[in-house]
Every structure is written in C-alpha cells, then in structure tokens.
Amino acid sequence: MAKAFEKRVSKRNRKKIDLETNLDYDIFKVNDDKLLRGAELQKVKLKDITVKKQVRTKFEDDTILDLAANIKENGLIQPLVLHRENDKFVLICGERRFRAMSTIKKMTEAPCFILEDKNHEELMAIQFSENSSREALHYIDQADSIMAYKKTTGSSERKIQSSLGISKSEVHRCLKIAKLPSSVKEAAKDYNIEKYVLLEWSKIKNRKKKKEIESLIVSGELTKRSQLKEMISIEDTRIDRKTKTLVKNLSALDNQTRLQLKEMLERSLD
Image (cartoon, rainbow, N blue to C red; front, top):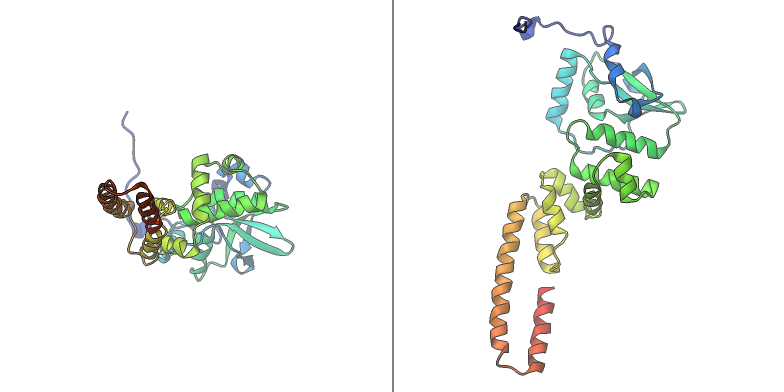
C-alpha cells in the first residue's frame, strides 16, 4: 500500500509555534538520560542567565542569525542546560541558542534543564559532549577543552577517551594541538586552516624552515595540507641535491675534512 503524505503547505500558511505559551515539553523527554540525569526542566528569564567561558569559542554570525530565524519560526527544539550556583543560573550548554534567542525582541525566557551539585569535572564533560554533538565544534576548541579537562582532572589519555567518548588517537592529536602557540591556533580558527597542517608543521625539525612556515600559517597564506606537503617536498628535493653534490665532492677529501664539512652541513640545516 502506497504511503500517504500530507499536503504541501506554503511557508506563509505554516502553523507557527508560540514560544511563550505553546511550547511542547514532551519533546524534551527524549534527551540523553546520562547527560541530564537529575535535571529539572523549567523556564528561566534570559537576563538571569550567566555566561562564563564555554568550550566553543568560534561563532559564525550568519549561523546565529539563521538559528534565530529558525527559533522564531518553529520554536525552540532543545532547551538550554544551566547549573545552579547559589543564586545564579550558569550556562553550561547552548550558547549558540542563547545568543540567537537574545536577538529576538519578544523572547524574554527559555526552557532550561537545571543541574545542581555537579563538580567541575562533570560540567566539563557535559559541555564537551553536548557541543560535540551539535554544530561541528572547531578542532582548536576541542583540543583546548580536552587539555583543560586533562589539567583539571589529571586524567590519562585512556581515561579521557573513556570519559568523553572519543578515540585515543584523537585525544593524542588534540593534546598536541593544544600545546601549539596561541598565534597559530588563533590563525587556524580565523582562516579555517586544516587540522593536519598544524600537526605536520609541529613535526618539522628544521627550525629555520619551521619558522618560515609558521609565518605563512599565522598570515593565513598556508591553509591546506596539500600546500604544506608541496613545500616540504620541494625543500626535501633541494636538500637531497645539495647532499648528493657534497658527498660527491667529499670523496676526494681526507676523513678529517669530510667530517668537518658534514658537521657544518648538519648545523646549517637546523
């Protein structure tokens, strides 16, 4: 039997949800039980919500405006997650939604899951889990949040893997990225530099060449892994030719002179 579909409705005639009075709280009951265990669902005024440093630090203005338009049209699908700290409600998850709602003039409050008596480690894990499951979390924010989690909890890479639900190799890569200079990490976010550009750049042993490439990364001139591989390939070819020429010339020299020239070459490549 053929499936029956509802008639198409024009955007103008679509039924709109009244954000203040007609919010369907039943849709919130399907949330991750582990993430929100013990949370209380209630409406909170936006002005009463305190925003501290979040896992996500990069926000696209266009996506915030698009989200605001979507919330205004269809209602808020997912509540914010707050933590009650004395007489304050501190935002744990949902900063994009909070920013979007703050641009809607008639929206003064929002449905929120209220958590209580959670320690810093638990809140960080909740933040990371919730942000990672939504709009792609920038890999720099992910790396910094994992490093902060490691420093706060003293966890090993294996424990982080278990707590945050990501692979051990990804944890290892994130911790390496988190240790990179802040100028390089900021450039990665500003210019959408591929993650493996930073990882492969960090492995370069030639300090002079590494510094040259760092300036290209910070200025946004080097953003693709393929660009970096090409630069390294050209440099390797140049060094290989130089080495072969030198070896050929060394064959006519005595051992002591040969060793001295070899040491000079190695120092010039560092």
